[in-house]
Length: 277
Image (tube, rainbow, N blue to C red; front, side, top):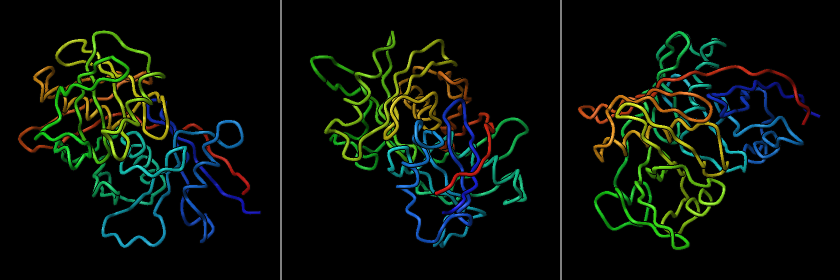
């Protein structure tokens, strides 16, 4: 029996189990470990599992991670997760500086510790349909008509290292019904995250999220970024916008001159413990 130390953290209620790879057996299967640990009845419970400095990583960054959803799938990026990761590695002294680089499947990500908030350079948004990916034969998939069960949605497809389908609405719809139908639609070969967005004013939106591989979550950092990019490209909102999710607020800046997205938000500790495997 192996004793594994873990830390539970969350970003606006989007919760993660954090484990340092040095504490894990060499032959561990991260995907299976995530399904085991994230189970809210038989495990610790969480939306995902974050591995600190995974083995066999040939990276030239300050640190590295891998992240797995509760169903065992591995996304390219997670905005709330990367803030939790950043807070953890800084507080534990794994990195010694407040701005540092992280190796991820979405490329090199740069978080900055700013007192209570973590600011993250989330990189360039991807709008080319083939790179998102989404099976739409256009230069951009903005306000594209998608009909499901005779209901039309105007979808906006953006990637922040992972695919998002952003839908602006007047009133929120049944997320449990429409989220999985859109996530698994044939347009999305790698499935997609789904965000329903209600505009409050030009600098404030409210967002409900259906996350690929997780279902309903209280927040999604990359989703918040994708929503602001979609809103700006459709001339609906400002480039600096507050995004209110069920778990709280994120602050997103889409710098069109640099073509980069910056996210600021909290990362909180829940508890630490030890689990036997």
